[in-house]
Amino acid sequence: MYRTHTCGELRISHVNTKVTLSGWVQRIRKMGGMTFVDLRDRYGITQLVFNEETNTTLCEEANKLGREYVIQVEGIVNERYNKNAKMPTGDIEIIVDKLLVLNASTTPPFTIENDTDGGDDLRMKYRYLDLRRENVRKNLELRHKMCIEVRHFLDSKGFLEIETPVLVGSTPEGARDFIVPSRMNPGCFYALPQSPQTLKQLLMVAGMDRYFQIVKCFRDEDLRADRQPEFTQIDCEMSFVEQDDVISLFEEMTKYLFKKVRGVDLGEKPFLRLPWLDAMKRFGSDKPDMRFGMEFVELMDTLQGKSDFAVFNDAAYIGGICAEGCAVYTRKQIDELTNFVKSPQIGAKGLVYARVNEDGSVKSSVDKFYSQEVLQELKTKMAAKPGDLILIISGDNAMKARKQLCELRLEMGNRMGLRDKNKFALLWVVDFPMFEWSDEEQRLMAMHHPFTSPKPEDIPLLDSDPANVKANAYDMVCNGCEVGGGSIRIHDAVLQAKIFKILGFTPEQAQAQFGFLMNAFKYGAPPHGGLAYGLDRWVSLFAGLDSIRDCIAFPKNNSGRDVMLDAPAHVDQKQLDELMIDVRHNEE
Image 1 (cartoon, one colour):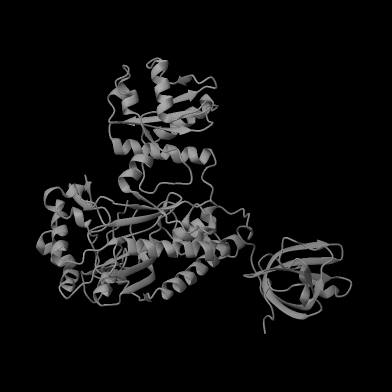
Image 2 (spheres, rainbow, N blue to C red):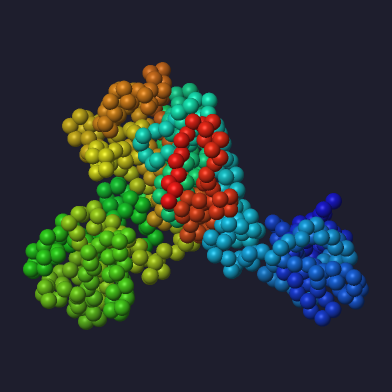
């Protein structure tokens, strides 16, 4: 038997018990004739004691141990003289009388501790070592607990967990697909699913009524902190529901998870439901961070045409935010903000600021263009007080300028300490546009996906003004992060065909791509809708992480590569020949 107890299990009640432990050597300390070894496993750390006076040979063996050696020890549990209140096992130690090295270890490339000296790339290359660190392991334990609670909640609500295929057909809408060649069907390809969208709709046609799946999804798109090429969704669908039914149930599930997993009570009050257009006007984002205010104030009436300042006079949008107590910002700090908004990632042409002095007067970067009277109107419009700083962005494209102001608002929220990771602000964003114009495709595209139902009252606009049709869609937002989204689906084949036509599909193309779904609708499709949560995003929010990578066991880097497995990689020509794929490498 390798162990009788784990390294996180023993307490003062176990004193004088004979035990066997196994694990990894965390650190070794030699003090006089005593050698102390911290032994670690998934459950915790226990201190081992080797005494030179009682067993010289055993102590010499202990002194030869190195970090990350895998060992087994036998000994007696003893009460520690110097207790360690920071460790659950800090009241006891093991007086070792037998030591067995199960496996030696070379020196790790970085220290296996919470405050490691390993950089991201190095830790990702040796991810199996990184996972030994307590803070990384706890993220996976949190993820596990969340999955258990999701299953418990949805099972209690009558949902069936049903697996859907991983090898599916490619779809032309949404992100790029990862495609998989078929050896048995030369020249043909599967795609890895971006989501089980059409399959879960077919399950509703099949009468499953309530479905869920914790499922891997794949999207070949550019990466960032909250994106990976493969990610996990909590995917759900329900029959005979309207928007309120879906929102109410998954709001209940969110509150349940916060209480069970994070220990946070969100209360009985329903989450705010914010129309998409209001979100864009007030925050410049369809996923606004509501942990703090600093809402946009439109200033066209206040500043446009009040002087010969061409930047504002020619603008399609002028908007500002009020940073409370920030009038003390130095010129250097203002320059940093200006450079921030002018960076290529943000793209603003500049930044105008105005300080409200303690005597109520306003000092601005455009003083030479505007009278104090106009600046006082600005102060009133912004509801600014003495000591506040007004920051203004303008542009010839209103939506673009709002998004730039949004980035400035978030930056100020960070600088002012308003984005507390232990504070949670949740809301639903609703009433999205059904379509958005694509300059690249030169046509209307589905803002969510082509199976989203329009608002019933907007269906007549599909023939006359499709750009102004609102979707029966909803996103859940937490702390400025979209954690889930869904919609009521189209269940009528005629309406679905009309949507495909607006999206530029010919009847033949629609039949070729989605005929299986449209044909299924002919056999009695129920009204249905659903939602998918991003599991990785939820876990990262609960754990207070900046990136979803740290809550995924084996993530990819920002280039979509697995540096541990060295994937993706070239394959043998023999495999390519079997698949009838001709790959010509550019040899220079």
